[in-house]
Amino acid sequence: MGKWEVDTSGWLQEHQTSIAEQTDVMEQILASCVGSDVVLQREVILRNDAARSKPITFSRQDNPTQTKEYEIYLALRDSWDYRRFLYQAGHEFGHVLMECYPRKECFKWISECLCSAISMYIMHRMKRFFPEQKKFYKDYRNSVFTRPKEILANHESVLDFYTQNKLDFWLDPEGPNENGVRTRNGVVELSWLEIIKKNPSAMKSVIHMDDSSIDLPPSGAYTNCDIMVHEMTTLFFQTWKSNCQGDAEKVFARDIAASIGYELLEI
Ligand SMILES: [Zn+2]
Image (cartoon, rainbow, N blue to C red; front, side):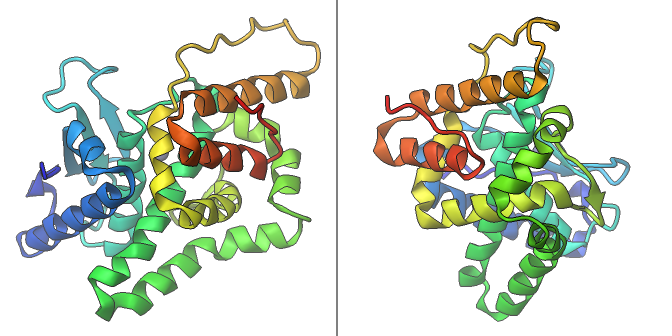
């Protein structure tokens, strides 16, 4: 398998081997879900940039001068913050699978939530590779979801929470961040993680999240913003599902959409 590269200069020498090893395991976990062919198609380099406020993945499609197809910059101030390394790297690898789609700002919350759910899924699988750290992964998952679970407890369901915050998601893909955890997105991630766990290989459907065929309405075209958000988000999910290959992938896209109230046509 073509290994995703790590520019180890962003880590202290004593951690470089471990960082490369963890990256390798994460790549293997993803390959076991989406296929090594998909992983091999993506040319990736992972770096740490302590000066960044948040991690980011640049695609050559958006940034033609970069040498690698996908250049990931993690934002670890303490480069040996192992939990944040896993959380951030897993999330950015999700963007790589999606080839940095969707590119329209109003749909980006969908990839943001899915990437974090993928990251937590990787964490869930890591314990098989490092059984001595089982408790560590579990504790970390619990700590990430503590606040989202508290928020969810004040709502009837994830659907109810999303419905009340629909516009907020549309306008701000990340939402509030508490200690490196996106609490609002976390509520949706809780339910999307369960969908991933149900059939991890169906996660491959995320490679079809291309939103370039969708034209957003000109401002003023809708008098009711709620209807516009509903129609455009439905169109996004419908387009994604239509692009999916095979039933498992389509079911995955359908379940993700249905969890927050978007019923898709059977096509
Ligand atoms: Zn992201």
